[in-house]
Length: 313
Length: 307
View 1 (cartoon, rainbow over the protein chains, first blue to last red):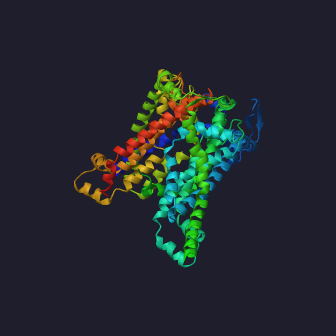
View 2 (view 1 turned 180 degrees about the vertical axis):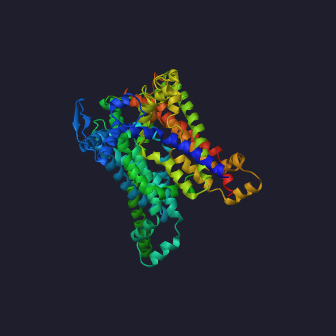
View 3 (view 1 turned 90 degrees about the vertical axis):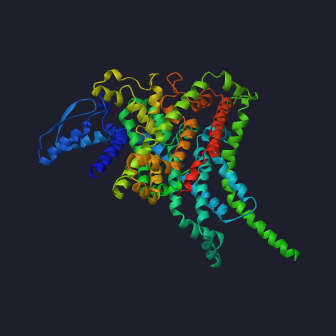
């Protein structure tokens, strides 16, 4: 029994190491300079070794001067404390460079993802609420009209969608991304939310009505609080999708001013930066941080949401 | 009497109208940004035109070109089929095994943290993952070649994506070992939803280990397997972003797929009408597969009844 558990852990660790391996190399390489990377991917960053040696001297109170090299390769003797700072700056050099390049992309990504998510939240809760709670002439047809769009794959609408956005004069603007994302993204959200609202007991709304609550009040004080977990899963999915979308931003930003992180990274990797691997890797790491924050914040409800079995055919 | 009935009617009318007003933003956005492109996809596939140029109605000639004259379409369809088959084989096997391994862990903590760990890679943008595989792992001076040299197999080291013999399989292997993402979570959910009574009955019958996995677990998570199957097939037919980033269809047309060919026709050759026609064909493939799926894949629903 004990051995079986051990084998289980060992097998899972092998899978985990293989999965994380490439990312570990990216992170490690982002702290090394391009000369180091030219000689191979294995190895501790030189800056880290320098930091280690300097820190040792500082800790021991050893005040002997240390040799550091500037970017031209000229050696200079400095006190250990200064050497420590020098190596620390070298370690994060690629990050400061990468940040300078991708900061505008990050801002664009944030603007696009957050406004899309806000729009989807507003549209989807409202539409799903109306379609779920009220029966009126044409309500079924409208639901069908909305849900039917799920059968059109992105590959069908990519080229004509570009032509449309161009015709509307929206190329090279946030609108070119936000409006189509909102239009497409709301459908899945409406679908999930409507089936959730359908499951809410009618008594709840009956009671609210008796207490004199209007439609808007029962929406705000009953539906929204009860559906927080569902809404958060839907929003996380939406932000993930928007953040990762590469092709659409790449196509509609013909002038390159509104590139988001995804399309920006591709532009970087195919530009003059292609040979500056260290900076590129730092950019990959930085570009993962916003979703990492979202991940840390939203994992528990998310794992529960997916694990509850809502996702099956 | 008449006026009262009229006022009730008008109230009903007003209610309906206010519902319409609330649905208007959703419906309007969908009409403009989904339905118009869909209609355009079909209508423009009948034209020959470039952006800003004159368009000429040519009937079904674009489709004729796809079927008979375009030398790239059929090889790229074959590539697409190969990629899709490989992806299906991978996504229906390895993540299931890993989900089962996690589910078999003795503690709830262990199960949670491993699920968390395998989900973490989703924070890395897909583009970055492709760029990492193309620029770090498969590169000429890349990790894979360095690894081969270190283990004493330098003769195997070569440009994985630039060698026509290995480009296809190298692209298909991007993401190895294919367990960082949602699949594990979805399969895990399926395993967790197997009723305890079934597991106990299996134990009583002496059905354990590998035998239980194939006789009980796999049939019981059939609906999850089916979901991943459909998603993988649809993704295989329409997906081309990864190949765009990794190889741009090269070397030659060795890793070209129809979606990527559509992209090049539209945005490199400015043949918008022809690109729309390719898009329509891919849609028809996906639509047919979806219909087949609805028509013939009902058996899992019967299994649901067991629960």
